[in-house]
Length: 246
Ligand code: 3PG
Image (cartoon, rainbow, N blue to C red):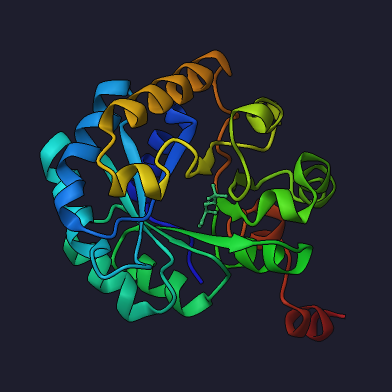
């Protein structure tokens, strides 16, 4: 697979600069506009809106339009869903697991794919597919920062967005990790607070998240995609050519 086009790198760079990505589950798209207002007002200018509920796709468009947030779709499980989400306004596509067909469709649509990867095998496949970053999911269940440390070590040219079980008490070590671009989480947008339209409390949690993100310092550099692009890989003759030459 060819590496991601440059536009997807811009979106990855923007997510990295924000450092914290709210993961939103909306039961009613009527909540999308006030929620976007609460996040933007707090300085969190991005969101992953999951497609776990029927309201998700509409909410993506509303949140992107209302406050000019950088909105992506989460829980994207097949290429058709990726397409639908992009039509709705999604600028990035997050999946819980690694699916090369979803990655390929995202590339055709020139949209950033962020698949979940939990093992070295999955991370290696994502790298071979030309990606620069994966979602490390479910981060805390997998063993947290220590697990990320171990599994990221063989992939110095890949970056990670840990998600799952992260909240203010355990956020800082993730954001301080040299391979972590940003962290995803739902702690500042709990489903019950959205259902209860408690925008004041959501704003408070979002402001705290924005403050912690700002205090965490800049993200690590995003290396160019390695798959099929590294000089070693380009210059090395294919095995057939080698055997013919000898
Ligand atoms: C998800 O996709 O549900 C995210 O991983 C959010 O996880 P969290 O609710 O534990 O933050």
